[in-house]
Image 1: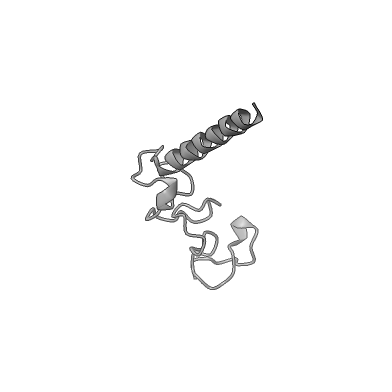
Image 2: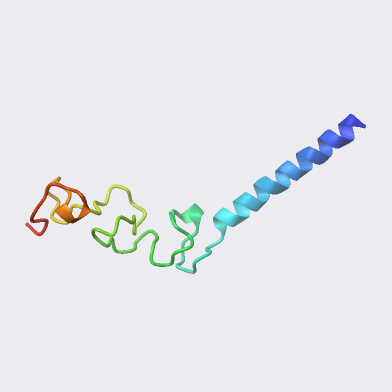
Length: 91
């Protein structure tokens, strides 16, 4: 009896893993990228690998943490409008 219960639980566990894998492989927002493809927000079609980074919106638009969102001029200082120290982030 216990063996049957254990086998049933293991089967359910595998189904759950399979559902997770299917969800990660599905492009939910229609931008051409799934979570498996590196889409860090698969509910927003403006966010995904290859998208343009929009400065100062505090969103990782291109799903690349190395892209500076708050440092438009690339000088290593975040802009004032996002709580940084750079008063001229265009220069």
